[in-house]
Length: 397
Image 1 (cartoon, rainbow, N blue to C red):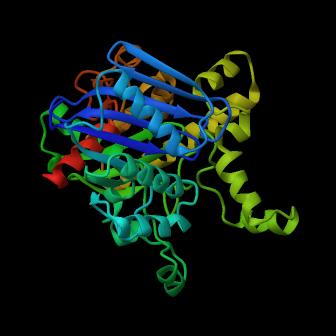
Image 2: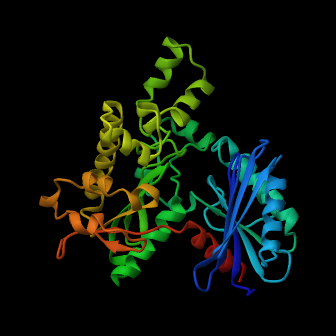
């Protein structure tokens, strides 16, 4: 082991992803996924090189899951409790107004992240659990929190603020925070390197399209707008989340359907988006349903593309034109149809997708616009784990 190794942890409500990253090479030395935490049929997949180790059985809580993962590291010859792990980087979804840069974790930081759970009730609590479990297992290694909201902390006021009573907004921390910031920052940096350009000279639109989806407008390396807001619910249509809706819908459902706040929360976060319209949230399943003639699936896809095109158009105007449009994350990297349909008919704006380049299979950064196109369209794989690991190293150096 070398002192360039960082363990990156992303803790969810019933799952936990981890990756041991060599920040010198950018390679993942090992990675794993702990699933069904709290259930009798828990499952862990641990990968180290070509070796795959699996565990099936009860995983009562996050502490047990992480302890089992550590044992798998031992079994594969990469003990985490020995010398060599330089830091542990934790993905934390919401940093509020307090955290806007990578932060070394102590008890006070954990307490503040927990307090911010009112802004991210689905995300911050399991983030805290993962931090506490990892600190107990690796007490003598620095732990660093890297926040999804940090990249967008300095959004211009016009993009940051909601048009509601300013005292109410100030008292309750209501503003647009933005999310997936680690991915947007990482990808926009890779774009500049890939093109051999200075980031300060580029106007970029980055489209992070996964089960959660967000768009950003980046001018000179700094974001000027993003689609997600106070929570990760605002913006694009997503796997199970609605994205933008008329706020009046919430009052209407309360008054007319008798739905309580928690019911509406569940509806918009877990039973909407592609899932709510088609019954599936996986794009591969959605595509198969469309091929099989499902009108509901086709309509869900059309709504998804329509919303995406609205944001692309808005950001082109905000930026005064873009030199680069980049697709990333699971759907953005793998769905040629989404890329083609999102940018269809925009040739008059210098934007086009080359069919051959778009459908070519590749896991590396690549151009999918025609040769000589005024606007470069790219597919760039995101790597949030590497970004978190490098941030952890930078702050502990």
